[in-house]
Amino acid sequence: MKSLVVLFALLFTLIAVPAIAIQPDEMLKDPKLEARARSVDQELRCLVCQNENIDDSDADLAHDLRLLVRKRIMAGDNNDQVKQYIVARYGNYVLLKPPFSPETYLLWFGPVVLLLAAATVAVFYIRRQSTVAIPSDPLSPEEEGRIAALAGDQTKERT
Image (tube, rainbow, N blue to C red; front, side, top):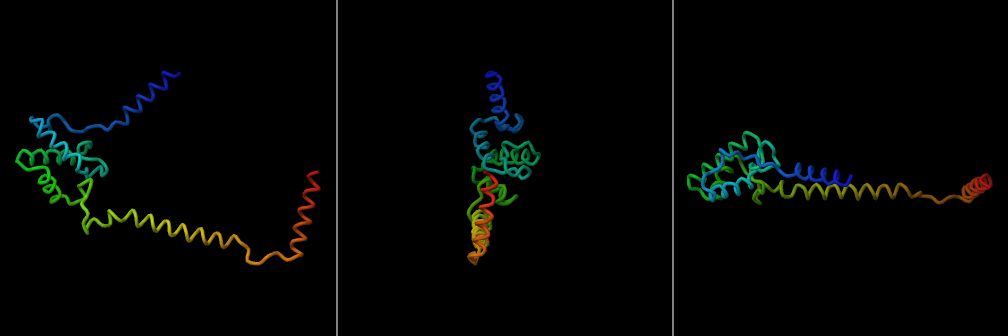
């Protein structure tokens, strides 16, 4: 039984490892240039998969982008020039870490604004619920007597 649990744990660990989609025919012959290309690949978003870098994506567009990165590196561009070339063609969205600029403010501040809006709505909702739950008028002596009588009747029934 214990070995079966270990086997399943190992299988799930292997499944969780991201697949590298780069094909052998895409790789550059020079290991240093290939390492540079892979580092650039890690910073570029697959426009089809959206949350994967192009190094991990099997999409055709990611394949084309990997080839384009390697072509630019072979042409003598440094890593920044390669990224600038790709951004010029596809926009800042292709970067996994977009720059902090006016056109990306919504991307940077959007989650914080949504969180603050949700917190504000929650605070107003909780305040409204707490004021609704508290009765505005205290019970009259007649109402208190009736409640005491009903409570007394229930305790007599239990004994």
